[in-house]
Image (cartoon, rainbow, N blue to C red; front, side):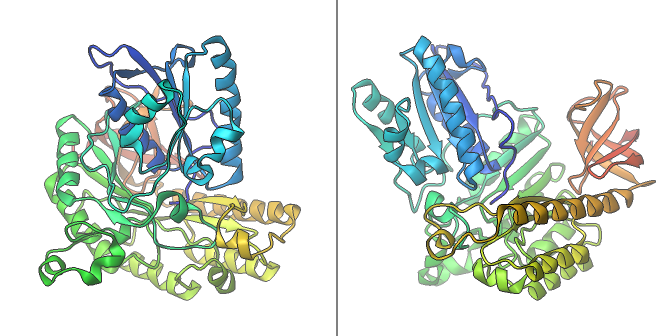
Length: 481
């Protein structure tokens, strides 16, 4: 899952309702993909049982944790700048402990303790249950590091706390790791092999969220379409499973259906999909159940077959077009978003034009576009020269972003005059007099507040739009309310 949520803002200050009797304070920030934010909820739950309540005030913290991303160098530099801020606070409060979690911790391992003297503990994505032991190691003056990748850990037995929650939307993790060895990506090295979570534990979490008033979930994984439960074990070992295990195996399409049927009034989204693994069974399941949103995040990375091969993407341009066309045939109003990497090694102007032409064919609703950033340890870093000049990357990225804005506006204009169902999530950033939510296609929609409240499903007639937002007027509650 390559998407960066927002590495330019100052992380996310996560809060948790105080647990009675807890006296220590935890300050935790998350950077990167949605999986990191979901993992932070797991960490806060583990530490709540160790006497920690979360705080939004860094200066008050006994323990400061930053959950990190390694997808681009810029993300890592953002974390190092935050550590400088922690260092300034630690000089005032020397008893404060500082820990680094997540992908950056996994990539740098013990090197982090050497490079960042302020850091007391380093914990990889599969080792969060070891946090209590590691904190004891710090107290006793030992190096505290656990970055061992697991072949089994899914945290399916941990009930995540909901941090900074609006009480309406929540993440539900269903898989961990990735087996797709894209040459540009560090995820297989920082999060390990693919393994799926027991569907029963997923359904229990979904039902619990509904009972607590949540109205929408997003099923999360580096590659959700690779979800496969046959009683435990890695996906790659499925061929060794017994006939009974194979006959009763749960695929991602099966899991989607189970969730949709378990809570028919709860909206269901999922992210991220991989073109090589997405099947029409998934799309047909989406079409069958009204509460599964008509939106797919489907990273393509490049429109050039030559570059796709260099990236070790297991799909061609033509296969991607066929997939898009099949999705649109089954769900005509399905929104599609993209991830795109610009300036991958050896990318020529012809390759760049192929990417632009692919975008013109698909006309994505929105996307996440980045200039290539060489990541240590990846095949691209080991075998390829980062030979596309910075200015060329910058110019090509600007062209892709401009084209995406054009296509995004084209897509939002298609909603003009239509009535869309919107789940109210929060007040609009630009006006306290307006609500903000998303429609089925994940397009942000704003409208006057009137007497509606957060968590309501509202029918909104679209009267205007920008390239990113629908603007309208509420005409009443939806049937789903």
